[in-house]
Each structure stands twice: as structure tokens, then as C-alpha cells.
Image (tube, rainbow, N blue to C red; front, side):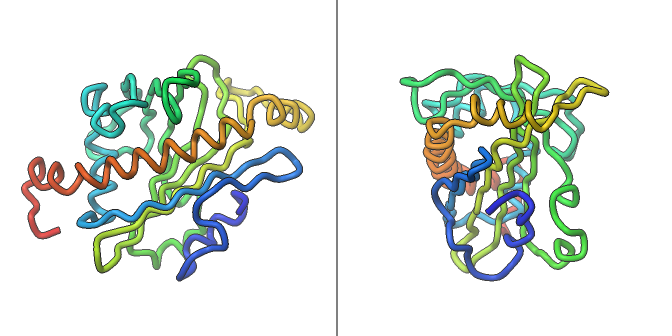
Length: 220
């Protein structure tokens, strides 16, 4: 699926591809990952992104790949509007260290307002950017539905959506195409798919206990 089809996640059931990489002729790629998370609930996932702090906690989420965590513009009680500044491997230390700026957004910027209003789960939405350069290169959503066993997370990374973070600066279509060819590589997509699959498996293990210990909410 392409970013323009993001509302398809709100449909019941599953889409043709729930795990893997979809590549398009114009250079865009969509990385899809599915994580089933027993004993977790959608509200726990939202809590995690609001609770997550520095490097020590970040390493709990993926002890191998996660290297550094900080925040910019943090607002107490919400992750929306803040930017998570991270250094991480994707799929292990045999690859480069990726330095990312993940700017969390209101789901209503991504989804149709009316359709999303009927959704009872959670959607963690963000713009994915380069930390060292003022460029965003994609958008992501962790789309979480509650199930009888816990919840499931259907993640989508829409790679190749280039935006400048410099006020007033825009990229031409030719520039965007060239950047997609250079930066949105099969290797990046493969590593991102593996990393997301692994980190959400780690989170499914630690989250139920951590959530109850920190919040005191034992009804979830």
C-alpha cells in the first residue's frame, strides 16, 4: 500500500501484504510489519511512547540495535508534537548507525477524520527524518488493534516522502526522485523490516509487566 491508501488500515480483516516490503516504480517503498502482542492492549502502546525516556529505557526495547535516545519538544502526558532523537542499528551492527529524528503527529493528520473516529485502538503516527540533516524522508504508523489475546500492531513505513525541515524550502519533483533513488534502497527497507519485527517482539515481552508496575493499572 502507498501512503495515500493509509485509510485501508481501518478496514476489518487484513490487507494483501502485512509483512514484507513493497517497491514501486517511482522509487517509493512501503515496509510492512505485523506483531502479535499477547497480554498487551492498545492503551499500553500509547503509554509506552509517552513514557519512554532516555537511552537506558530505549535499550530495553532492543538491546542490540538501540544505542541512544533523547527527546526534543517533549510535552508532559503526550507523545504528539515531540521528536524522538535516536541512534540505532537496523538489523544488527554489521550495518551503519542510523541517526533519526522521529516527529510524532496527531493521527488525524494521517487518517480520514470521520473514519478514524470509529476506531477503538491506537495509531502512533510520525514523520521520519534524518537527525544530522534537516530532511524528512518518510512517514510511519504503528496501527494497533485490540484482540481477545491482547493486541496486534500493524506497522507501515512509507519511505520516499521527502520534505525539508528548513522553513520556506521545498524540493522539486526531480530532486525528490533523485533522493529516492539514492537513499530509499532495498537494503534500508530490508533492515527496517527486520528491526521493526524484532523490536516489537521485545516490547511485547516487557510491556505488560512494566506498564502495570509503573501505572498501577492492573485492569488492562
